[in-house]
Length: 563
Image 1 (cartoon, helix red, strand yellow):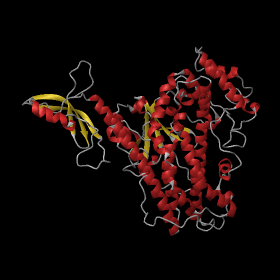
Image 2 (image 1 turned 120 degrees about the vertical axis):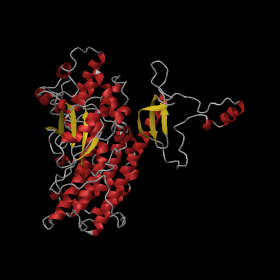
Image 3 (image 1 turned 180 degrees about the horizontal axis):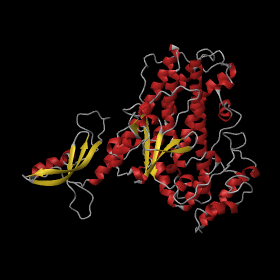
């Protein structure tokens, strides 16, 4: 709506009328709640060429995503996208992929995720895929009916649901803690009542019955202190000095609570509903980032100061998550909070034009996302690797059992920054669908274009990183050898002067191509090469951007290299 708060800018990208593929139109309803999807990173060659944050060829309004949590654990965090087609069942959609990965669907369960309510629903493989548009499905090993009700997160380790980890009293970005009795009365209690170190120890004894490690005993003691006194925080934003920070804690439930809306048309109300969803989900996202920094990260740092879990590398586990939090707080202050502030002051609908300046700074504000998105998959893998440690698993279980986690695992939380990037475009597209005024449409199209460009840049950065690592893997498998073998000493001397003629280097720039164009692997596989008449030789081929590399298996005993 243009009437209401005075716009902060009159500029608009007049020529930006394209609608990027990474957005989809949300169904018109009184509350638009996008459902997050995990990151995309497939182990199959043809899948790794896909965008990790957006759909490269299919619109998000035509796809559903699937993660296979069976078989090779290194691929569990990978996500694949499938077209949602009427008349095609879920089983038919997944069949070819499962055949490639040697997955038998008859031994698997399909779980439809509902992140908003932190729930999962078992899904039939005969479900028509058209009904799964925009949804995410986990394929897991089939469990018994009892395990479906009380399944384990870490194999035999029971997941305990806590009724507490009570939020700090009224302070969102504060280092203060509650009164000890208030926290201790409910955190990590198997029975509602007294909290003590003995109860915590009994709880974790059910996980690790035979553990007598002194570090484990020290962990129990520290967790007891955290339950009573709270966790020392690494960083905080002063409470009461900034209206924008206070709004994160005290945001109204609905925009109608602060706006006079009776004179608005149905489409205008629908527009404001979707716009409020953008605001509300941003607040929820920032709160979840605070859970990582104030619970998981702060707890781990304090434990390490007590010589516990010193072997855990916090950067490998969390990457630059604190920088992500700072970036989104800046984005909130500059872009979305001004809408809330003006709605409160003038009792008028939010002015869409006031967001344009903030979205125009998206590339600068969200720079930390490049590093985080590149390392997010490794963070999950590092977390999974350390689950063999009883002390680390106990720490993780304790943190995940706190109420602030909302029953989410750290694995689930770590993918949320990648998911959030795609939601900006989705929600802006939904706002555009319910917008009639030309100036507002132009501004929304400009913002969608900015978001799309940023997401594409992040995707491009991720692909380049993947290609570089894959190329390194190929180089490591190929034995060094002389490209040119000459029996003439004079020719050999000339060749040695120019190493580019005698040394094979896949990192060398491609001929007749711009320097920014990088070589990457398209396909690899075994072939039989016909040699000297009827004889055939086994070879392994790499199809690269600018060459077909034909290699012979190494003759060395037990060697996995080739030349």
